Amino acid sequence: MTKKQKISSTGLVFFYYLVNNLFHPRGTLRLFAVSFSKKRWYIKCMNVFKGKKITVMGLGLLGGALNDVRYLASKGADLLVTDLKNEKELASSLEKLTEYTNIKYRLGGHNLEDFQNTDMVLQPGNVPLDSPFLLEARKNNIPVYVSESLFAQYAPDVVLAGVTGTRGKTTTTHLLYGILKKAQLNKSSVFLGGNIKNVSTLALLDQVQSGDIVVLELDSWALHGMGDVQRSPQVAVFTTFMPDHLNYYKNNIDLYLADKANIFKFQQEGDVLVVGSEISVMLQKKYGREIKSDVVVARAADVPENWRVQLLGDHNRLNIACAIGAARALSVSDEVIKEIVESFAGVEGRLEFVREYNGVKIYNDTTATTPDATIAGLEALGKEKNIVLIMGGADKMLDMDKLVAKLPVYVKEVVLLSGTGTDKIRENITDVQKSSASTLQDAVLKAVEVAAQGDVILFSPAFASFGMFTNEYDRGEQFNAVVKGLK
Image (cartoon, rainbow, N blue to C red; front, side, top):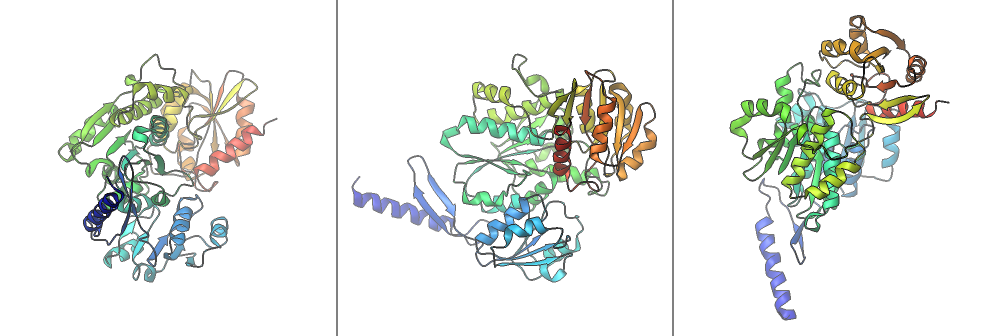
């Protein structure tokens, strides 16, 4: 082909993509730049946020919303950031945004007018379902997004691999990401997003290209947003389903499940849904007619016995099986899968081994915010009454009876942290020694005093972190600092 022919061919292809993609299927004007590769054409979304009026509802302190705001500000959006917290409470986040002059703030509360005259609203996941501010936006036909749904709305032709579940989604997500990074499928790049600390899924728009793989950890709030844009990942993983967040869903577990189900509701034929064996029958019975994708049931027993798995507990073998199912769906070889599974030591705050102190092994399971999660930790680590358990925190309206019944089997003493949930459970703990602690450091010292050589100290709260801590990550970091500081 001559140089003139190459230029002509490139121009024709550019014109083809321009005509076919000028208008987004959902009616949003988009412009594209196209560059040639030996293997595929990359279509990258141009700057669609410049000059857009965007209300960001919630800045917070975890970093995800902060990085969303930073990304949108860098793209020239006209931002209004509003938060229930005041300037003093948000100081650490606000300090990182001082360079941007296109951000206005309304802190210490929300105003309805900020949700009436704007192009879109970006919200954190856990805004109440009946929030008058989001209802006001929708009444005015203003689209409401979460970071993941806004990314899905504007991302090029990428492969989404999404993971959800009441328990196991974080471990499964990180393991699957590690496997795909190692596999380097078709030389595609692999990205990690969703409910990941300090990560803005939205900001991945500047990095992804057509054909890349994006692994997303999707909680129920992110999936509520994915339902708004009617998008499900091409490869979806649903690990487990248990009662959780009933304080948010007003004690209606069906609403919680409905949000979770968006992981597969908008899949098409040829997509894949990997389902944990414990919930496969329930999902098939409830949603069978709506599932268009190929279903793979993952079982803990699917993990080959000769694989040298580092993660503890049957619940983690189920997580591994789910990751294996998703990786195989993306054509990863068992050789690569085995290598990463055997080298995977887990994620911080999830049965994380912190240290051994005077013959006592100490584990941080701060992300265990439900009774089922704490039970899984007890079963993974416990022998007969060899665990000193540190637990307690804020109530989530969950039934604790099953956990209380398990305590005498594995636990020699419970050290209780303060909180609304602790107050509800305290009097029900009758068949095991218990004590109370006013601080986390006090709790650790009491546990160390009780534990004998060969015992385990397990920090597995079974409740939310609100009250004593900023969030569950702060809680876990404080615990690790106390434990590592033991003399």
